[in-house]
Image (cartoon, rainbow, N blue to C red; front, side, top):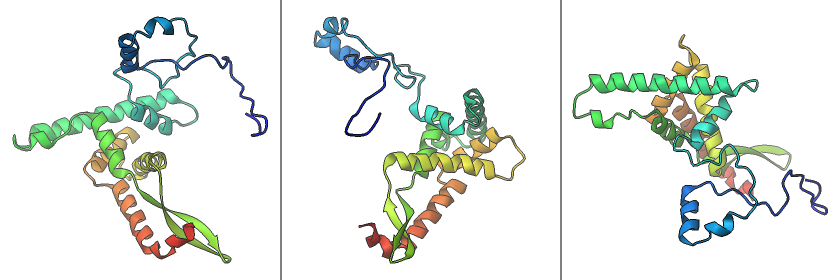
Length: 210
């Protein structure tokens, strides 16, 4: 697009093309409202890679793979996360088989659930930003939105796995870090707690946001 005065969008498809209806709930709603017949005559844009109704698609897994990509090799990033999931499964199964029957319900065996919980536990709600006032730079705590919070959580998890001093492969280190973050432990959780301590120490500068 160009400037706001003359907005011109460059697209392969004309403006009358509508977005694809890929969710099963929306398709069922069209059928119940008897609008399905009218929708068959509309022109639809092709669905993007993240617009799918497949039960195997997970938006968080796809986002995590995108952050793992190096030098444009998405297949390598996908293989790395798949091996990390396999390591998580092996570690959790070993813990499940070795614990008492009363504690088996507390052990999560699904790697995707562990990834989801690890990212959720690592999400910060505050961060520090530099604001200049009267020729001096202050570190001011500010709240952050959900997208920025998820970005930091995923970035910290990957960075913590790369910084581990273990001699294992990266996917094994990533698996251990995800399990620790799932249990509210590990380097990523410590990094979030240290950030909160810094925000608490600089809370007297919070009024500089306005």
